[in-house]
Image 1 (cartoon, rainbow, N blue to C red):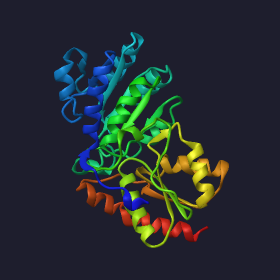
Image 2 (image 1 turned 120 degrees about the vertical axis):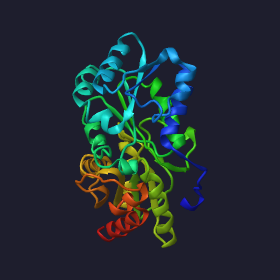
Image 3 (image 1 turned 90 degrees about the vertical axis):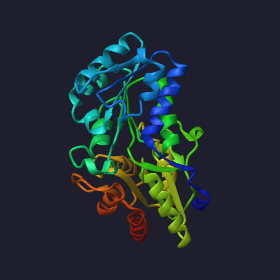
Length: 317
């Protein structure tokens, strides 16, 4: 039952990254951290203090950072590049495509401050297209963890995962509700079993989906909430098994509904088990400056929007 899922604390997911890379580096001497003048924002101070010889400050030169990282892999290093999600993808897409993805380099592209919850920095920094950009690259693994614990676990897990990875996380303090042992790359995390509707979510929207699921359960609706933290490779079996039971779904993501998690779920359903689907996310728009929670509300990414979408999609069965 979703009502049994409780908040264990509150912490930003980028701190999960900072703590995760430090712990991973203690276990693996090949891990190198690179940043484009954003060490503090990416919570790298602990890493820098403990492993100064394994830290590279690239300055405001993100394309160079990707090139350096690709080169480091040739010598067996495991580079983690760090900057805001907008600069991790949009600004350096050519370098990622050519030097990392096409070449199959073992670079971990770690991107903070993603989505609307970046808040006051506004539309120029609130990238809402990055999941789509990265999942379209052949061989690229795309991970969007839900909270501090899961971000920490994912940061550590990708060190042992061979191949390029895009790891997306955020800025705001957010509820902690998972345990680190839950995380396996490519394996969806199921929070409840249901028969009336499935809610698939990633990132910050997982907690919003759990909240929505609790409300729906109070209304007598049987809800299956599934955290698709790995957008690629997608846990197709988990998706199919769920939608065959519930026969309808809602997707929730802090990203454009074009090209993100919703598209991946819809493609899977179209191939294996066509069902009605409602999509929660930004609708072909840029963001704007504002308080994170106010922006989620304005753009229809709040708990009540997921509840309404679930009610609507059930009526479409």
